Length: 227
Image (tube, rainbow, N blue to C red; front, side, top):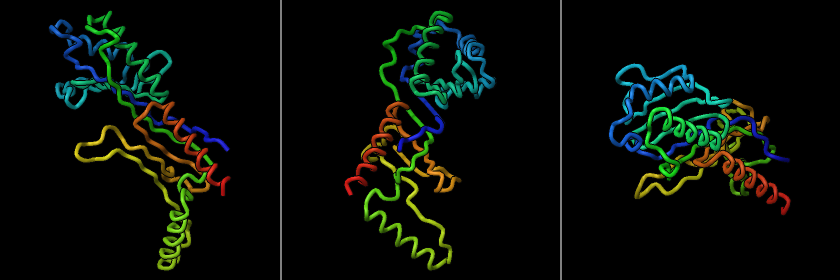
């Protein structure tokens, strides 16, 4: 019984670099650079109005290609560059770094490989597994599920199955805001329980995300074997 990846919904990377550092003396003509980005990726949607050029909100380019990788979105912020694909965060990072290198040659950006020191990731994916990820993680959870089912069905007369549908982990939220998204596993919306399909989000590289899900699946199955 193995976890089977269904789809990568989002593979996002955010590389922290101040946009002003890429043109420290204002030598890069911004409109020419943005036009070059649109042309290089073949984006179908790109900045056109003055309000589209606000780096605090993100200067966005949508739906393009880099080689054989579909780029869902490229966003330029004052303090970072964000790129979304559905390939993997590894591929998203590769595309972003390759573009920076090519833009340095083509437009005179002052970029070298040491400038992006910090990264954040967001990985969203769906998968199938017969493993009872959420229902029987512990006997108290299973007992509570049964009690809820009896209480609700007794009132409504509807005996449809009940199960826990989400498991969420996050860092402490005080005294400061958490860094990144929570790690979640939950039943895929609008999908019958019988299909055993799940959705998961993590502030991690795609490969690490999948590895953690596989390890959790193995631990849950091992807990059953021990019983």
